[in-house]
Length: 396
Image (tube, rainbow, N blue to C red; front, side, top):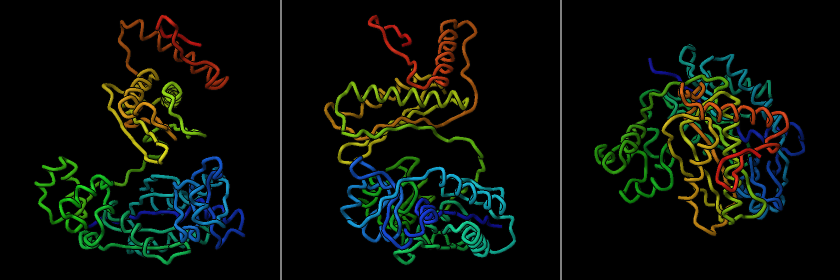
């Protein structure tokens, strides 16, 4: 029997919670986020605001220019977390096979339930609305890929100016036909650069991509080309994986009040972020294999790079070195930077294995544990690694 997979997305989640806090916001254009004069960014915006062209991740100053009557609401993160937990608790009552991928989004495998997929989706949507007062949309299909795209399509086709509350189901066997007329950018794995390359080949829709020779795609794009060919046909065998409480990545970033082009300040910020990521790894008893760098320039261009380490680590020196190397290859001297971030992924549980005879590594490890203990008690700025004039590493 084909699987029954649902993709749940809470509609304008932060805004819906804010309307519960302040019902006078209902029907008005408003955005949740930072102040425009403080270089704030739109975290979420109401559907009336979207009618003016406002969208998430937009600078708040730009949002206000598009919608002069825009109401700006400061975030209430604890309320969002509480509401998310209430939603996911009800989802878990429907099925234990839940893969939460963000605070307002999850995949559900409801293959064991006897009702039709649309009836299951309707029942869940109704319960979340009646018991929590939160609108949501759902997409359903035989796999995660098509369920997610179905939800995106359903929400985009809903009436403008109000929560979509959409339910879009793709019946078994109709995956490829559903995807065929959609633009290639709707497919997972197709970013701006890949879209440009596909357009150069005369491929504009997912159906055209599905009809293109897979061997040619593999020659042009490598394994990514084979993946694209498979996805274009609506094939996705990934299971819904329930991983309660397990982090998939850890990251820290900072947005400067004013753009920074000073190399020394950027390196110092990078080191502080990387050290914070390493502390989080050690606190969670996790090791990371991949280090990622994120830069946002003054024109809001966002650049990302990553590198895979020879061995998994929680050592801040290793993570700092890797992030710095990525930064030095990516950043051009004098280039103004708005945001810098450091992250790690490919996480695994465990502790670093030290050589039985490596006394120096053992001392370094014990030193790091002592530093962690002091920082946990007095704060991350109480003590940190420094470098003496001799070039030897020390502690300040």
